[in-house]
Length: 68
Image (cartoon, rainbow, N blue to C red):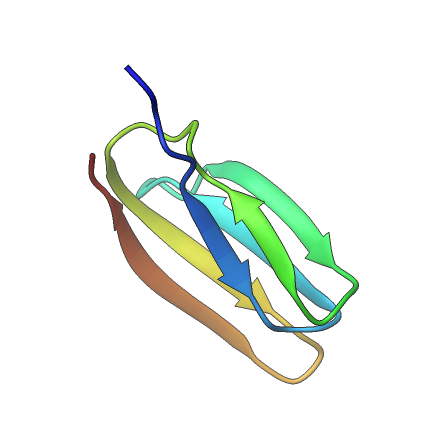
């Protein structure tokens, strides 16, 4: 069985990026330095997660669903 990688592509420069479970626990965190960043989320279990992106100007949090 071959598992395809699951990625999130960001096109945000100089941002803090966090993936959290629904309890607010940080699962993965990175800082983007370049304008295009790819984040591998294939290790995450199926379920609901919160994605938080914070720049010097704005903070956005969205819910994502990982399904296989």
